[in-house]
Image 1 (spheres, rainbow, N blue to C red):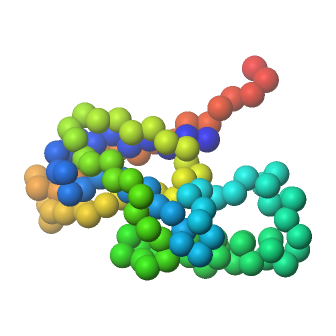
Image 2: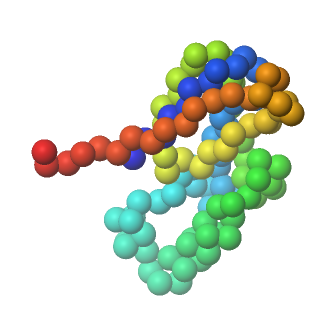
Length: 112
């Protein structure tokens, strides 16, 4: 599955950030086939980290920003939706001066 963002405003301090989970070194949610190879104790520990840390904000000390894709007017950013990501530095207080973007998700269709 893929995620996408189209930016409709310019602001180099805003955009989409991609993160590494410090406790595990992961940059995305592990695939189920990988999880099935883990022993129960390691699996429970890993799932606990992900479950408890998944809703952290960009100020979290549990993740490290490793890439910032700045908001540039009419830029489209496509990425694997399992990557740990977050919108960066929202701004504005009305429709005329706020961060404006469109998000979408793409899922591959198998066996047509």
